[in-house]
Image 1 (tube, rainbow, N blue to C red):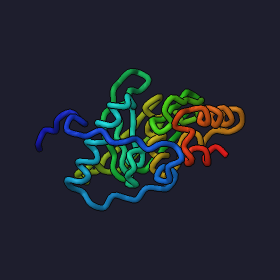
Image 2: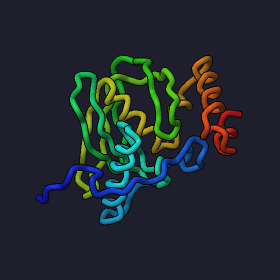
Image 3: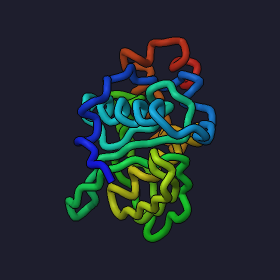
Amino acid sequence: MRQRPIPGTSGLVRTMTLLGDPVLHAPCAEVTEFGPDLDRLVEDMFATMYAAQGVGLAANQVGVGQRVFVYDCPDDEDVRHVGHVVNPRLVEADGYEVTGPEGCLSLPGLEAGTTRFDRAVVEGVDREGRPVRVEGTGFFARCLQHECDHLDGTVYVDRLAGLRLRRAKRGIRKAPWGQREQARAYTA
């Protein structure tokens, strides 16, 4: 088995897709071809996530409508989890429901209290097609649920209601990127 370099070191930083872009609001397609193109996508996603100082990134956040996400995220005990999942399925989300701050690289500068389960399990494969199972608790569970949502065409503000939703929409309208036609249509 060959040793891989640190994720993202050979990747290129891609342009971040912002709220309102249609690719963020449509379910992503299953990956059916494994090889150099998928390897390049995963490496570029790590590089992009690190450049944006995020803890997770879904492929549609860089304009690619495929079911892939990467992560480098601590749990509540500060244990670092680094990896990627291709064709992920959220198979378990349980435990306590916790409302905590959540942000998104596709909504830069915004954050809102969002309710998530404090335990999540995702199954899928790696970029070579080998089965993977990732279990997370606390903040890492939030990350896993957030990234799976992205691949289903959902952004965290879609989970908000009432005052939190109104505040998020107001923040979107005030954000420089919120002036784009696609983002304005989202907050109408």
